[in-house]
Length: 287
Ligand SMILES: C[S@@+](CC[C@H](N)C(=O)[O-])C[C@H]1O[C@@H](n2cnc3c(N)ncnc32)[C@H](O)[C@@H]1O
Image 1 (tube, protein in one colour):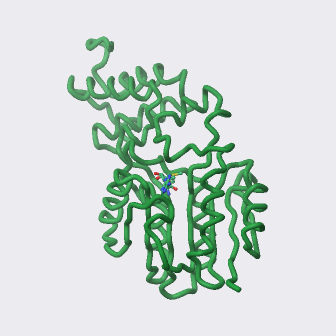
Image 2 (cartoon, rainbow, N blue to C red):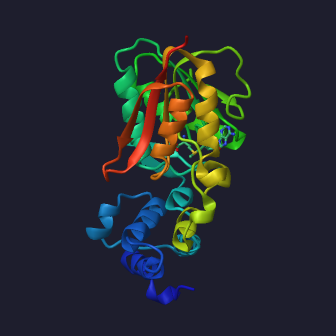
């Protein structure tokens, strides 16, 4: 409990939050500032330039946010949004919190399709919609279908598309390819679940444990969904169409082998800024 008499301004509240979060975060003060600035709807810079008074109502809400954060709830769920690709996306506990690694997947897709008019794209497992929405903004009139097995996730993705006035992404509930028959795409893109839950440390479990299992975990060392997508995508690709996947830090060689076996060519791995292989792509030439 916060001692009410001791907290008359924002700085003392931030200090309380910083102390509480110091055992679970590397940047406790930053997190406390983000939470309080969102509650007060002010720019956090003001904490350093003004003495800001705090109402008992804000104090109670802040205390409960700090408690939730202390239990491992991601900041993005507490404030309901996350910056990605310099855009702000609505986020809730039905979707994965967007990760910076996924920008690499998008950069590769843009590089591949930047000169093509109306490329046909299928995104598998769209979650909050970040990949499809960014591609829609960056490419030339793309025709995008974005799927997810979770209708709750699709609800968030649709809200995000609406926020950016995008009305022509076809959002569809589908268990990978279950709703598809003869459609063909220039690009199938996915950041599927690829984490092996059994290998997570307690610290890792704490940091991602509140996100949906279905967005994170996959059987067989985290490779089941990657394998399924690699083995089944070629049926839905145009001649010379591309499959592009994000994968775990230690799954590049596995994906490379699977893609070779499935008949892909020009297979290419990409590394993130920490030099870790993160994405793989390959093209499929129909006989
Ligand atoms: C790692 S998250 C990626 C979310 C988002 N594309 C991103 O990059 O932030 C994986 C997504 O795949 C979805 N998913 C899991 N299993 C699926 C399945 N069998 N069919 C379709 N989508 C699935 C999850 O609901 C989740 O939204």
